[in-house]
Every structure is written in C-alpha cells, then in structure tokens.
Length: 419
Image 1 (cartoon, rainbow, N blue to C red):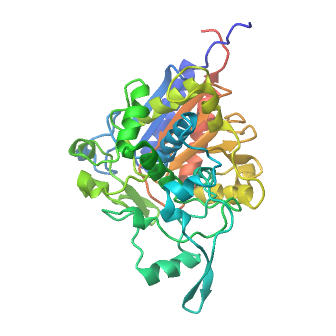
Image 2: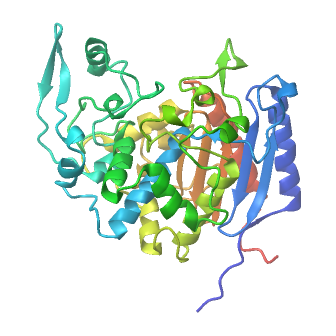
Image 3: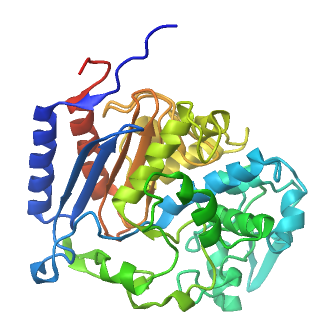
C-alpha cells in the first residue's frame, strides 16, 4: 500500500496573513465580530476571533471562544446526520413512500396550493410519493417562502402563526405544499419535519437525541450545543445585528432568544434551532470528516460518504432552483448561481467543480441566516467555519468576506508537504 500523504497544514506566514486580514476586516466596521477556524479531522490549523460582543459597544466585552452563536440553518446538518443514523440502523428508508404517511401524517395530508380564484384558495391533491429524501433535499414542497407565493394570502386568511414566534409549535410549519415532491427545489421546512421524524422514531426529543447519539461521539462532546436558551448560554451569547442605511447596528432580529427561557421552546426546529460555539460546531465537522476518512464515529464511513453524494431527485427544476437559491443567498460563483456546478446531498450543497477560491470538487457546504458558514473539503482534507451574527436579506456583503477568507485559507495551505 502507498504511504499515506502527510496531512495539510498552514504555513506560519499564511497564519499571520489570516490574522492580519481578520483584524483589518473587523476594523472596517462593515460586519460585526468574526470567527474563523480551519482544521483537519484531527488538528486545528488556524483559529481567529475578533470584535465586540455587541457591535460598537466595547464596554459589553469582546467575543472569545466561549461565545455562543445562533446557528440557524447550520442545525440542518446535525438533523440530517441523525436521519442517516436511523437509516444505518434500518429504522428508516429515505425512499420509502409510506414512511412519511405513517410517521408524519400532519405533513402527508397537506394538499398543494395552486393559487387563488378571487379569495378562494385552489388546492390540488398530492399525487407523487413524499419521502425522507425530499425532506432532506428541500424538494418536498414545504417552503419557508411566503411572499410572492399563494401561501402569503393563505397565511393572512388563516391567521397562520410564524415559526419564528416565541412558543411556536408544530402548527407553525404545518401548511400546504407548493409543488409535487421531487419536481422542484425550494428552501424550506423539510428538515424541521425530518427532525420531528427523528423524535418520533427514536422516542427522544431532538435535544436528547443529539446529546446521546451525536455530541457524545465528538471529542469534547460539544457541550455548548443546545436548543434551549439557558441563562449560561444567554450570558455568553454574541449580540445579534442588522444593517440600517448600510451601517451595522445591534438588532435582536427575527427570533430574539436572548429574552426567551427554555420553557419558551415548544418545538425543536431541526432546521434552525441550535445555539452553540464556533469551536464546538467545528469539532462536529472534524468528526464527520474523520468518519469519511475511515474512522468509526457517529456514522460508518460508507454512510458518511452520503454527505458528499448527489441526492437530488432527477428531473424537474431541482438543479436550477438550487442555483437560484444560492444566488439569493449571496454566493458569487457563476456555476453555482446557475446550478451547473452544484448539487445537493442528503445533508448539504455539493460543488461538482473545483472552486477558483480554493475548495475542491466534492466539497460540501451550508450556512445559517445570521451569516455563519461551514464547509468540508474531503479531497484537501480540511473543514472550515467562518461567521458572525448579522441578519440581513442581502447575502452579498458576507459572501464577499467568505470568498476572501477561502482564498486566504487555500493560499496559505500546503497539502502533502512533509512537516
């Protein structure tokens, strides 16, 4: 057998360049405090953290590695891994057309909302099977989007409560579908439903399932990770921010968990609910890469490989819809924005061509609404976390920062060099 190649590492000059870049970017004041981590499956190569816990208010302290973050959609990867564990154990099949009918009847019975005739909604009965694959790839028809769709009028007519509200329950995501499963991609509540499936199949809350079956496998056990805003996590939490007139300002945002209590969490959103530190989330990414590389852990290596494999249903507009979504989220690469160089696995977006910014084909990525982002590049052998706490619909400013960070990382990386 050929000798294994030495793991990648960052040059000392490259680390200094990353430090200088991070310091300069935070000093510009165009984004709040930033967190940046690069690691292999077994070693942290770089860590950088800079900025005030609340932008422009240094008296409230600086961020550090104990600072907790609202991770939003970075929760999705964890829930997807839980589903893969159930699949590995033979408890679910991602293509079983009866699974959702049996375990999630509230979702299975939802009709497709075609539109309105005057003030009367026009519904169509779903005719295609609805599967766990559809939930995990955002092709199930249960969407976040209200504005610009018939769901906006439906929500107004029915008094539908937002899933972002304090005390939101299952009914906040129980609403009509917008299309037949597997025919289109629309970012939405599929993985929230998948989280409920994990709870019902396992008999555990998602909080307890993650603690027993995922975090316990990760070095350090990701102790900061939770769905519940405890006094401790709130004391350590970075402030949320928005942008007004082009300027960053403190703003509690869409879901102000800093004033909530654990009892206010009535439903654990598997697509958006976790709080935790950048270090703990990166440790989880490292563990997944280790599983892919052949080590035993939360999933077997052959199951970990599914994180990186195309899982989008064939046909329909799924690929181009994914590209449109990435465009809206602020990703800059033309091949991503058209959908030509991306697909989606059972957990994350996969780039199918090398990125000019550095990551190799076969890498996977996803992020959170408050501008946190992660990627795993199995060919290079690294994971990365980059983020802040900023809720703004325009993802382009943060996207430019992310691109610059990626270029700095790969520019400083030595792969296969002997240490």
